[in-house]
Length: 395
Image (tube, rainbow, N blue to C red; front, side, top):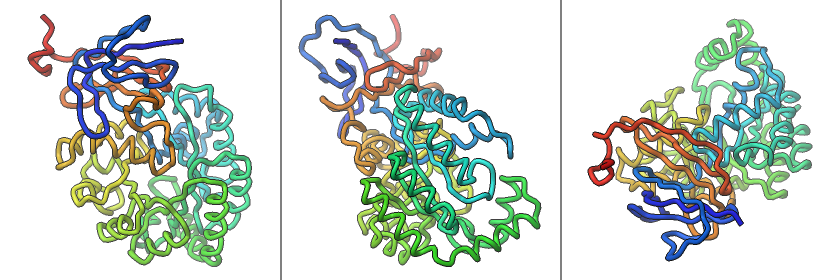
Protein backbone atom coordinates (compact mmCIF):
# COMPACT_ATOMS: atom_id res chain seq x y z
CA UNK A 1 0.00 0.00 0.00
CA UNK A 2 1.44 3.39 -1.04
CA UNK A 3 0.56 6.42 1.11
CA UNK A 4 1.30 10.13 0.73
CA UNK A 5 0.52 12.68 3.42
CA UNK A 6 0.24 16.28 2.21
CA UNK A 7 0.51 18.78 5.06
CA UNK A 8 0.11 22.54 5.61
CA UNK A 9 -1.88 22.96 2.40
CA UNK A 10 -4.67 25.35 1.57
CA UNK A 11 -7.27 22.85 0.32
CA UNK A 12 -10.15 23.85 -1.96
CA UNK A 13 -13.17 21.70 -1.13
CA UNK A 14 -16.45 21.79 -3.11
CA UNK A 15 -17.97 24.45 -0.85
CA UNK A 16 -15.18 25.82 1.34
CA UNK A 17 -11.45 26.36 1.69
CA UNK A 18 -9.43 24.75 4.48
CA UNK A 19 -6.42 26.75 5.61
CA UNK A 20 -3.25 25.00 6.82
CA UNK A 21 -4.86 21.61 6.31
CA UNK A 22 -3.76 18.09 5.41
CA UNK A 23 -4.79 15.26 3.13
CA UNK A 24 -3.90 11.57 2.95
CA UNK A 25 -3.61 9.63 -0.33
CA UNK A 26 -3.61 5.83 -0.35
CA UNK A 27 -3.37 3.61 -3.42
CA UNK A 28 -4.45 6.34 -5.82
CA UNK A 29 -7.47 7.58 -3.84
CA UNK A 30 -8.14 10.29 -1.30
CA UNK A 31 -8.18 8.37 1.96
CA UNK A 32 -8.80 11.19 4.44
CA UNK A 33 -8.91 14.96 4.85
CA UNK A 34 -7.31 16.15 8.10
CA UNK A 35 -6.80 12.58 9.34
CA UNK A 36 -6.43 12.06 13.06
CA UNK A 37 -3.59 9.55 12.72
CA UNK A 38 -1.17 8.76 9.91
CA UNK A 39 1.27 5.86 9.90
CA UNK A 40 3.85 4.84 7.35
CA UNK A 41 3.08 7.55 4.82
CA UNK A 42 5.56 9.69 2.93
CA UNK A 43 5.05 13.29 4.05
CA UNK A 44 5.21 16.32 1.76
CA UNK A 45 5.00 19.84 3.21
CA UNK A 46 2.78 21.99 0.94
CA UNK A 47 3.33 25.17 2.93
CA UNK A 48 2.18 28.21 0.99
CA UNK A 49 0.45 26.22 -1.75
CA UNK A 50 -3.18 25.70 -2.72
CA UNK A 51 -4.42 22.17 -3.40
CA UNK A 52 -7.17 21.72 -6.01
CA UNK A 53 -8.85 18.80 -7.75
CA UNK A 54 -7.13 17.81 -10.98
CA UNK A 55 -8.49 19.88 -13.84
CA UNK A 56 -10.86 18.36 -16.42
CA UNK A 57 -10.70 19.91 -19.89
CA UNK A 58 -13.64 18.94 -22.10
CA UNK A 59 -12.36 20.65 -25.24
CA UNK A 60 -8.80 21.33 -26.32
CA UNK A 61 -7.52 20.97 -29.86
CA UNK A 62 -3.86 21.54 -28.94
CA UNK A 63 -3.25 18.00 -30.19
CA UNK A 64 -3.82 19.32 -33.72
CA UNK A 65 -0.86 21.70 -33.45
CA UNK A 66 1.29 18.97 -31.94
CA UNK A 67 0.45 16.71 -34.88
CA UNK A 68 0.62 19.45 -37.52
CA UNK A 69 2.73 22.36 -36.20
CA UNK A 70 2.80 23.95 -39.64
CA UNK A 71 0.39 23.62 -42.52
CA UNK A 72 0.86 20.21 -44.22
CA UNK A 73 3.75 19.30 -41.88
CA UNK A 74 2.64 16.16 -39.99
CA UNK A 75 4.68 14.76 -37.11
CA UNK A 76 4.58 11.07 -36.08
CA UNK A 77 1.35 10.69 -34.15
CA UNK A 78 2.77 8.74 -31.21
CA UNK A 79 5.28 11.57 -30.73
CA UNK A 80 2.52 14.21 -30.92
CA UNK A 81 0.33 12.43 -28.38
CA UNK A 82 3.22 12.01 -25.95
CA UNK A 83 4.06 15.72 -26.16
CA UNK A 84 0.52 16.94 -25.55
CA UNK A 85 0.28 14.51 -22.63
CA UNK A 86 3.26 16.27 -21.01
CA UNK A 87 1.75 19.69 -21.69
CA UNK A 88 -1.44 18.72 -19.91
CA UNK A 89 0.40 17.35 -16.88
CA UNK A 90 2.31 20.63 -16.53
CA UNK A 91 -0.97 22.57 -16.85
CA UNK A 92 -2.64 20.56 -14.06
CA UNK A 93 -5.10 18.95 -16.47
CA UNK A 94 -5.48 15.38 -15.30
CA UNK A 95 -8.39 14.54 -17.63
CA UNK A 96 -8.03 16.16 -21.06
CA UNK A 97 -10.55 15.53 -23.83
CA UNK A 98 -8.49 15.96 -26.99
CA UNK A 99 -10.72 17.60 -29.59
CA UNK A 100 -10.40 16.25 -33.14
CA UNK A 101 -12.38 17.81 -35.97
CA UNK A 102 -13.75 15.71 -38.82
CA UNK A 103 -14.09 18.06 -41.78
CA UNK A 104 -13.36 15.91 -44.83
CA UNK A 105 -10.25 17.04 -46.72
CA UNK A 106 -10.38 20.73 -45.85
CA UNK A 107 -6.94 20.79 -44.27
CA UNK A 108 -4.24 18.61 -42.73
CA UNK A 109 -5.09 16.96 -39.46
CA UNK A 110 -8.81 17.74 -39.87
CA UNK A 111 -8.94 15.39 -42.82
CA UNK A 112 -11.22 12.51 -41.81
CA UNK A 113 -8.63 9.80 -42.34
CA UNK A 114 -5.91 11.68 -40.44
CA UNK A 115 -8.25 12.70 -37.61
CA UNK A 116 -9.30 9.06 -37.19
CA UNK A 117 -5.65 8.03 -37.00
CA UNK A 118 -5.04 10.61 -34.27
CA UNK A 119 -8.06 9.32 -32.32
CA UNK A 120 -6.71 5.78 -32.46
CA UNK A 121 -3.23 6.98 -31.49
CA UNK A 122 -4.66 8.65 -28.38
CA UNK A 123 -6.53 5.48 -27.46
CA UNK A 124 -3.41 3.37 -27.96
CA UNK A 125 -1.46 5.69 -25.68
CA UNK A 126 -4.08 5.63 -22.94
CA UNK A 127 -2.81 4.02 -19.77
CA UNK A 128 0.81 4.73 -20.67
CA UNK A 129 0.83 8.51 -20.30
CA UNK A 130 0.97 10.92 -17.42
CA UNK A 131 -2.73 11.84 -17.45
CA UNK A 132 -6.07 10.23 -18.34
CA UNK A 133 -6.19 11.06 -22.06
CA UNK A 134 -9.66 10.99 -23.63
CA UNK A 135 -11.13 11.80 -27.03
CA UNK A 136 -13.63 14.48 -28.05
CA UNK A 137 -14.74 14.01 -31.66
CA UNK A 138 -16.17 17.07 -33.40
CA UNK A 139 -18.44 16.42 -36.38
CA UNK A 140 -18.71 19.10 -39.06
CA UNK A 141 -22.32 18.60 -40.15
CA UNK A 142 -21.62 19.66 -43.75
CA UNK A 143 -19.39 16.60 -44.23
CA UNK A 144 -21.36 13.53 -45.26
CA UNK A 145 -18.16 11.47 -45.61
CA UNK A 146 -17.32 11.78 -41.91
CA UNK A 147 -20.51 10.06 -40.73
CA UNK A 148 -19.40 6.44 -41.34
CA UNK A 149 -15.91 7.22 -40.02
CA UNK A 150 -17.31 8.47 -36.73
CA UNK A 151 -19.77 5.61 -36.51
CA UNK A 152 -16.84 3.17 -36.74
CA UNK A 153 -14.93 5.02 -34.03
CA UNK A 154 -17.99 4.92 -31.79
CA UNK A 155 -18.29 1.18 -32.35
CA UNK A 156 -14.63 0.79 -31.41
CA UNK A 157 -15.25 2.61 -28.13
CA UNK A 158 -12.72 5.26 -29.15
CA UNK A 159 -14.97 8.30 -28.55
CA UNK A 160 -15.52 9.75 -25.06
CA UNK A 161 -17.40 12.91 -26.09
CA UNK A 162 -19.07 13.92 -29.36
CA UNK A 163 -20.04 17.39 -30.50
CA UNK A 164 -21.72 18.59 -33.67
CA UNK A 165 -20.74 21.85 -35.33
CA UNK A 166 -21.60 23.93 -38.35
CA UNK A 167 -18.81 26.22 -39.53
CA UNK A 168 -20.47 27.24 -42.77
CA UNK A 169 -20.37 31.00 -43.34
CA UNK A 170 -23.27 33.24 -42.41
CA UNK A 171 -24.06 31.89 -38.93
CA UNK A 172 -22.45 30.65 -35.74
CA UNK A 173 -18.78 31.54 -35.41
CA UNK A 174 -18.55 32.91 -38.95
CA UNK A 175 -21.18 35.60 -39.14
CA UNK A 176 -20.30 36.55 -42.73
CA UNK A 177 -18.70 35.00 -45.79
CA UNK A 178 -15.77 37.37 -45.45
CA UNK A 179 -15.03 36.33 -41.85
CA UNK A 180 -14.88 32.70 -43.00
CA UNK A 181 -12.60 33.51 -45.94
CA UNK A 182 -10.26 35.55 -43.74
CA UNK A 183 -10.07 32.70 -41.22
CA UNK A 184 -9.19 30.13 -43.87
CA UNK A 185 -6.58 32.41 -45.40
CA UNK A 186 -5.00 33.31 -42.06
CA UNK A 187 -5.14 29.98 -40.25
CA UNK A 188 -4.68 27.54 -43.09
CA UNK A 189 -2.67 29.43 -45.70
CA UNK A 190 -5.41 29.24 -48.36
CA UNK A 191 -5.51 31.70 -51.20
CA UNK A 192 -8.65 33.80 -51.45
CA UNK A 193 -9.89 31.76 -54.40
CA UNK A 194 -9.34 28.51 -52.50
CA UNK A 195 -11.07 29.83 -49.37
CA UNK A 196 -14.06 31.09 -51.33
CA UNK A 197 -14.36 27.74 -53.12
CA UNK A 198 -14.36 25.86 -49.80
CA UNK A 199 -17.04 28.25 -48.52
CA UNK A 200 -19.26 27.56 -51.53
CA UNK A 201 -18.82 23.81 -51.17
CA UNK A 202 -19.59 23.98 -47.46
CA UNK A 203 -22.83 25.85 -48.06
CA UNK A 204 -23.88 23.36 -50.74
CA UNK A 205 -23.09 20.43 -48.43
CA UNK A 206 -25.64 21.48 -45.81
CA UNK A 207 -28.25 19.42 -47.67
CA UNK A 208 -29.08 16.38 -45.56
CA UNK A 209 -27.14 17.68 -42.56
CA UNK A 210 -30.12 17.59 -40.19
CA UNK A 211 -30.70 13.89 -40.76
CA UNK A 212 -26.98 13.08 -40.42
CA UNK A 213 -26.84 14.91 -37.10
CA UNK A 214 -29.89 13.06 -35.82
CA UNK A 215 -28.41 9.68 -36.77
CA UNK A 216 -24.97 10.36 -35.30
CA UNK A 217 -26.23 11.80 -32.03
CA UNK A 218 -28.54 8.85 -31.54
CA UNK A 219 -25.66 6.47 -32.22
CA UNK A 220 -23.42 8.19 -29.66
CA UNK A 221 -26.13 8.46 -27.03
CA UNK A 222 -27.00 4.80 -27.52
CA UNK A 223 -23.44 3.95 -26.54
CA UNK A 224 -23.53 6.21 -23.49
CA UNK A 225 -21.29 8.89 -25.01
CA UNK A 226 -22.10 12.46 -23.84
CA UNK A 227 -22.98 14.83 -26.69
CA UNK A 228 -22.78 18.58 -27.21
CA UNK A 229 -23.78 21.22 -29.73
CA UNK A 230 -21.22 23.78 -30.86
CA UNK A 231 -21.50 27.53 -31.51
CA UNK A 232 -25.22 27.77 -30.79
CA UNK A 233 -26.30 31.21 -31.93
CA UNK A 234 -30.09 31.35 -31.41
CA UNK A 235 -32.62 30.25 -28.84
CA UNK A 236 -34.31 28.16 -31.55
CA UNK A 237 -31.10 26.28 -32.25
CA UNK A 238 -30.59 25.50 -28.57
CA UNK A 239 -34.13 24.14 -28.32
CA UNK A 240 -33.66 22.05 -31.47
CA UNK A 241 -30.39 20.57 -30.25
CA UNK A 242 -31.84 19.86 -26.82
CA UNK A 243 -34.67 17.94 -28.49
CA UNK A 244 -32.01 15.72 -30.08
CA UNK A 245 -30.66 14.84 -26.65
CA UNK A 246 -27.44 16.87 -26.47
CA UNK A 247 -26.31 17.47 -22.90
CA UNK A 248 -23.97 20.48 -23.31
CA UNK A 249 -23.82 23.73 -25.28
CA UNK A 250 -20.31 24.63 -26.42
CA UNK A 251 -19.37 28.26 -27.00
CA UNK A 252 -22.82 29.87 -27.22
CA UNK A 253 -22.40 32.95 -29.38
CA UNK A 254 -24.35 35.43 -27.27
CA UNK A 255 -25.86 35.90 -23.82
CA UNK A 256 -29.45 35.15 -24.87
CA UNK A 257 -28.36 31.82 -26.32
CA UNK A 258 -26.40 30.97 -23.17
CA UNK A 259 -29.42 31.80 -21.02
CA UNK A 260 -31.61 29.61 -23.23
CA UNK A 261 -29.18 26.72 -22.87
CA UNK A 262 -29.17 26.99 -19.09
CA UNK A 263 -32.97 27.22 -19.00
CA UNK A 264 -33.05 23.97 -21.02
CA UNK A 265 -30.80 22.28 -18.51
CA UNK A 266 -27.68 22.40 -20.68
CA UNK A 267 -24.39 23.43 -19.05
CA UNK A 268 -22.55 25.90 -21.25
CA UNK A 269 -18.90 25.47 -22.18
CA UNK A 270 -16.83 28.64 -22.61
CA UNK A 271 -13.21 29.26 -23.45
CA UNK A 272 -10.53 29.96 -20.86
CA UNK A 273 -8.51 31.96 -23.44
CA UNK A 274 -11.56 34.23 -23.74
CA UNK A 275 -11.39 34.82 -19.96
CA UNK A 276 -7.65 35.46 -20.06
CA UNK A 277 -7.79 37.86 -23.02
CA UNK A 278 -11.05 39.52 -22.02
CA UNK A 279 -12.62 38.89 -25.41
CA UNK A 280 -13.59 36.30 -27.99
CA UNK A 281 -11.30 35.79 -30.98
CA UNK A 282 -14.34 35.68 -33.27
CA UNK A 283 -16.22 38.65 -31.83
CA UNK A 284 -18.71 36.54 -29.90
CA UNK A 285 -19.76 36.93 -26.27
CA UNK A 286 -17.14 37.63 -23.60
CA UNK A 287 -16.89 34.60 -21.35
CA UNK A 288 -16.50 36.74 -18.22
CA UNK A 289 -19.88 38.33 -18.97
CA UNK A 290 -21.46 34.88 -19.06
CA UNK A 291 -19.85 34.05 -15.72
CA UNK A 292 -21.18 37.26 -14.16
CA UNK A 293 -24.65 36.54 -15.59
CA UNK A 294 -24.63 33.10 -13.99
CA UNK A 295 -24.79 31.20 -17.29
CA UNK A 296 -21.26 29.79 -17.47
CA UNK A 297 -21.17 26.14 -16.48
CA UNK A 298 -17.77 24.92 -17.68
CA UNK A 299 -14.51 26.46 -18.83
CA UNK A 300 -12.31 24.63 -21.34
CA UNK A 301 -8.84 25.47 -22.59
CA UNK A 302 -10.05 25.45 -26.22
CA UNK A 303 -6.59 25.53 -27.84
CA UNK A 304 -4.15 26.40 -25.01
CA UNK A 305 -3.97 24.06 -21.96
CA UNK A 306 -2.10 26.54 -19.77
CA UNK A 307 -5.03 28.98 -19.77
CA UNK A 308 -7.40 26.74 -17.82
CA UNK A 309 -6.05 27.18 -14.30
CA UNK A 310 -5.29 30.86 -14.93
CA UNK A 311 -8.90 31.47 -15.98
CA UNK A 312 -10.28 29.82 -12.84
CA UNK A 313 -8.24 32.11 -10.59
CA UNK A 314 -9.17 35.17 -12.69
CA UNK A 315 -12.85 34.31 -12.30
CA UNK A 316 -12.44 34.08 -8.53
CA UNK A 317 -10.65 37.45 -8.47
CA UNK A 318 -12.97 39.40 -10.78
CA UNK A 319 -16.48 38.05 -10.19
CA UNK A 320 -18.70 37.26 -7.25
CA UNK A 321 -17.85 33.57 -7.46
CA UNK A 322 -15.95 32.12 -4.53
CA UNK A 323 -12.74 30.20 -5.17
CA UNK A 324 -14.55 26.83 -4.80
CA UNK A 325 -17.21 27.98 -7.28
CA UNK A 326 -14.59 29.19 -9.76
CA UNK A 327 -12.58 25.98 -9.42
CA UNK A 328 -15.77 23.96 -10.03
CA UNK A 329 -15.90 25.44 -13.55
CA UNK A 330 -12.80 23.42 -14.42
CA UNK A 331 -13.28 20.40 -12.15
CA UNK A 332 -16.63 19.36 -10.67
CA UNK A 333 -18.86 20.81 -13.38
CA UNK A 334 -17.11 19.13 -16.33
CA UNK A 335 -16.93 15.91 -14.30
CA UNK A 336 -20.70 15.98 -13.82
CA UNK A 337 -21.38 16.84 -17.47
CA UNK A 338 -19.16 14.00 -18.69
CA UNK A 339 -20.49 11.55 -16.09
CA UNK A 340 -17.15 11.11 -14.36
CA UNK A 341 -18.29 10.20 -10.88
CA UNK A 342 -14.86 9.31 -9.56
CA UNK A 343 -13.13 12.70 -9.83
CA UNK A 344 -13.55 16.47 -10.00
CA UNK A 345 -13.66 17.16 -6.25
CA UNK A 346 -11.40 16.91 -3.24
CA UNK A 347 -13.45 14.35 -1.33
CA UNK A 348 -12.77 11.11 0.50
CA UNK A 349 -13.06 8.05 -1.75
CA UNK A 350 -12.46 9.85 -5.06
CA UNK A 351 -9.45 9.49 -7.34
CA UNK A 352 -6.44 11.39 -6.08
CA UNK A 353 -6.30 13.64 -9.13
CA UNK A 354 -4.81 16.69 -7.45
CA UNK A 355 -2.98 19.88 -8.38
CA UNK A 356 -0.86 22.08 -6.14
CA UNK A 357 -0.58 25.74 -7.10
CA UNK A 358 1.55 28.64 -5.95
CA UNK A 359 1.05 32.28 -6.91
CA UNK A 360 3.90 33.88 -8.78
CA UNK A 361 3.24 37.58 -9.36
CA UNK A 362 -0.47 36.74 -8.97
CA UNK A 363 -0.20 34.02 -11.63
CA UNK A 364 -1.26 30.54 -10.47
CA UNK A 365 1.61 28.20 -11.32
CA UNK A 366 1.38 24.43 -10.98
CA UNK A 367 4.05 23.05 -8.65
CA UNK A 368 2.82 19.46 -8.34
CA UNK A 369 0.24 17.31 -10.09
CA UNK A 370 -0.94 13.82 -9.18
CA UNK A 371 -2.95 11.55 -11.47
CA UNK A 372 -4.65 8.80 -9.44
CA UNK A 373 -2.12 9.45 -6.70
CA UNK A 374 0.92 9.22 -9.00
CA UNK A 375 3.13 12.30 -9.13
CA UNK A 376 3.24 13.29 -12.81
CA UNK A 377 4.61 16.82 -12.58
CA UNK A 378 6.81 18.69 -10.15
CA UNK A 379 8.43 22.10 -10.35
CA UNK A 380 9.75 24.67 -7.92
CA UNK A 381 9.33 28.42 -8.25
CA UNK A 382 11.28 31.09 -6.40
CA UNK A 383 8.39 32.91 -4.80
CA UNK A 384 9.41 36.34 -3.43
CA UNK A 385 8.97 36.64 0.34
CA UNK A 386 6.85 39.77 -0.09
CA UNK A 387 4.20 37.70 -1.91
CA UNK A 388 3.79 35.25 0.93
CA UNK A 389 1.29 35.71 3.74
CA UNK A 390 3.07 36.82 6.96
CA UNK A 391 2.40 33.53 8.70
CA UNK A 392 4.03 31.68 5.81
CA UNK A 393 7.25 33.68 5.67
CA UNK A 394 10.16 31.36 6.49
CA UNK A 395 11.77 32.02 9.86
